[in-house]
Amino acid sequence: MKQTVIQKSNTNSANRNMTPSSILSGKSILLTFFALFVISIPSVWGKKLETVTDTDFLKLVQTEKFVVVLFNKPNCKECEDAEHELAMARESLVDEFNAWVVKLVSSPLAKLYLAKTVEPAIVFFRHGVPLLYHGSINEDDLISKFRRFQDPVVKELNDETFEHLTQASTGATTGDWLVMFYKNTCITSQRLQALWEAVGAELKGRLNVARVDKSGAGAATGRRFEIKDTPSFVLFRHGKMFSYELDSVTVQNFVDFATDFFRNSKAQNIPAPKSPL
Image 1 (cartoon, rainbow, N blue to C red):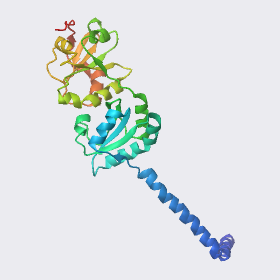
Image 2 (cartoon, rainbow, N blue to C red; image 1 turned 60 degrees about the vertical axis):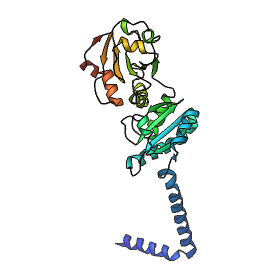
Image 3 (cartoon, rainbow, N blue to C red; image 1 turned 60 degrees about the horizontal axis):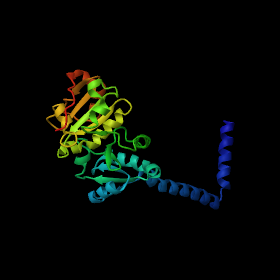
Image 4 (spheres, rainbow, N blue to C red; image 1 turned 135 degrees about the vertical axis):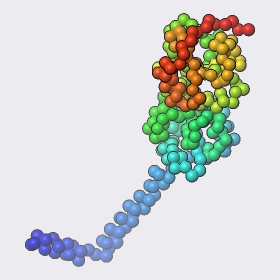
């Protein structure tokens, strides 16, 4: 009881010794701290990306080496979170890659670059070639992924290079190859370019990912494998070929097919190369 009384007495004494100026000084410190805290909130949580028009965005893609775009839509909590994370990464992306980091809101271009992926979605353009970002949308992962894939990863094959590079009919000593057969006039094929780059990025170091234009420089190769529709996807592995037959086209589905699920498809013999007509 005595200790309690002494403490109360000391406290009361201290309060009596406080002057108006010391109280005002304490309030000033608190107000200053609060003001700094409030000012810091927009810089951390209120970061926004510059919104550009479709026309300006396409000009950036044509003229700039690196462009990072967030496809966004209104009234979307996930979109707001994605914008925050990309905005946090913007300084590093600008410093390391001299990249433009922008956003498009409710843009019709989303259909061209996202295939069936919905907003929010991030696409990284390297020399005009789009890579659909696949992974957790957070600052560290974004920077790491873009740092690793500054150059396109999907190889473009044609009638002259296909057999030489893949060695498909001789047992694929250059490794396994996952190939998309497409036509330049096929809208669906065009919409899959960014996604196919993402597949190549996910499989890099494990197998090769490529494209063949069966309506142009890869016409003979398309006939060789009796490709009727585009896009068509074929895995060449150990002297056999496996066709991807699922309707779903996602990065993860293609990765799973190339690494394991191909075993559920019929293994076909690889036909000999055809001479170009």
